[in-house]
Image: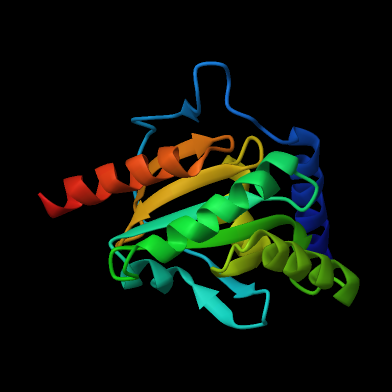
Length: 185
C-alpha cells in the first residue's frame, strides 16, 4: 500500500513539472493517427462526489472526451467554461465529457476537494470530474505530457485521438462533430 502512495505521489509531481500547455501559433497540437491502443482503456476511480466510476462509462456514449486538467493550470481553467457549454450541447448517448483532475488525488484532504469543486462551480464545467488514482494515472496520466491533455475514445473505450493544449468552443465543437459524423456514416 505504501508503494502505491509513492507511485501516485511521483505521478502528481510529474504532471506538475510538465506544466500547462497552450496551443502553438498554428493552433492546437493534435497527435492525429497516434498509435491506437491494442486494448480498450480501463480504469476505476471516484468522482468529486465520491461516486465510483469505471471505464464502463464509455459505453454510455458514442464518443467520450476525457480532459486531464490541473487546479494550477490557467489554460485548463480558461477552457472549462467552453467545455461545460459543449457538454450541454449534445445528447449523452452521442457525446459526454469526463474531467480528470491531475493534481488532486482520491483521499486528499477536504481543503483540496473544496478547491476542485469550487473551480468546477466557478467555471461552469458541469460534467463528472474524477480524482487521480493509480488506475486513472495508468489510463490517462502517463500519456499526458502537459495539462490540459484531452483524449477522445469511442463507446468501446478505444483511443481515437489526443489533443494537447487548451482550445476554444468552436475548435472542440468542430472536432466532436467530425468524430460523430464519421461514427454515423
